[in-house]
Length: 225
Ligand code: CDP
View 1: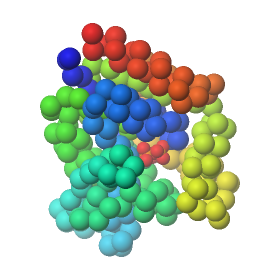
View 2 (view 1 turned 90 degrees about the vertical axis):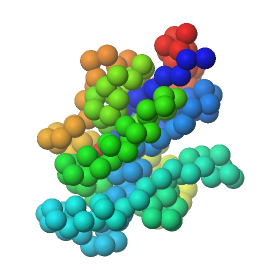
View 3 (view 1 turned 120 degrees about the vertical axis):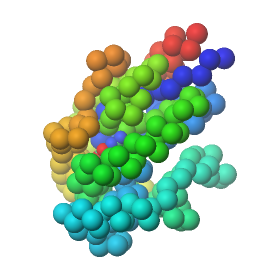
View 4 (view 1 turned 180 degrees about the vertical axis):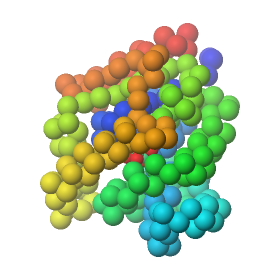
């Protein structure tokens, strides 16, 4: 069967990763969460106390970062590793969420991440989700989806997700973070979040996981066949 690349972009917490993972499992493709790469870079800069105005420190810091995705045998999920450590959980903390959009707006950071993402896509059979996948990373992806959902629904989904690992999480803090990231991600100078001209829009406000998957899978099979 012909292999394609699937690019999934959209607002924060709109269910992109869930759908990307479902598609990758069903098609036996590799799922790459590009946001996890920006989160891991943000985590490194926090750990090393790198000032985001210090371009030299950023360049030097990037040279020290080695990122990879490895399958967790227990969950079957592809998880992100940084410099020999599984950071999949650490990168979901609010401290990282509050810095990641500033980090992702830096040109050198984007060049570093995009080069690795494009290398991963060369063999096809990739489902990648993010903000600039259909516009910058894989402008020739055979299928591009732009995912949206009502902001209140997105907040509820992310709040419930974070609550599972952090019972002290505050809803207002999550809401402020989503709003702030959406604004920054869509207005930044380099590779802002934007719907590609040839992307199909998937509004999942009123769709459950199964319904959203069914629709995306139908579109994917139309491109594959
Ligand atoms: O929280 P959510 O799953 O919606 O976001 P994420 O996919 O984990 O991405 C975290 C942040 O990384 C975003 O808010 C963007 O600032 C940045 N990002 C980006 O700039 N480009 C991408 N392709 C993916 C993420």
